[in-house]
Image (cartoon, rainbow, N blue to C red):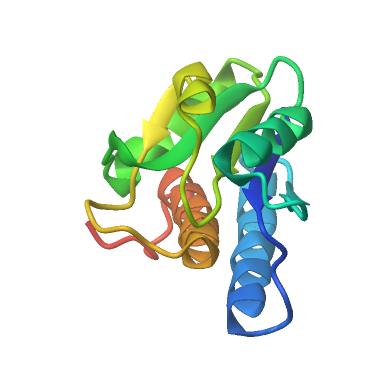
Length: 155
């Protein structure tokens, strides 16, 4: 199994980058004994200003072939943390690579959203895509702790 996060935008040094790194390190440590690999982050950037269509093309090129595609989108389902953990375990148990995609400031192009096996949202509010990356990293760590039976997640 392989887990990739493919995101629009470059995360510069700062609090968001520090949080993403911290949560992904925690996930790697906790997830190792559960059969999860470390997460690889791929950043894409449309320097020509082509909008969502150009971003979708860059994202599509970065998605590993055959990976289960999960996109973060405000219109997506709103799973609980235990439901997210169960889905993550399901991908692991099926030995499927997983690619989690975060769009840019304008969201994801419809064609890319429609290709996804699962569209998820972190609530009905719209979040800056850099904060979504932090929230996703934290949820990955939380999922690993749920699956490990750790007290981090208080249900």
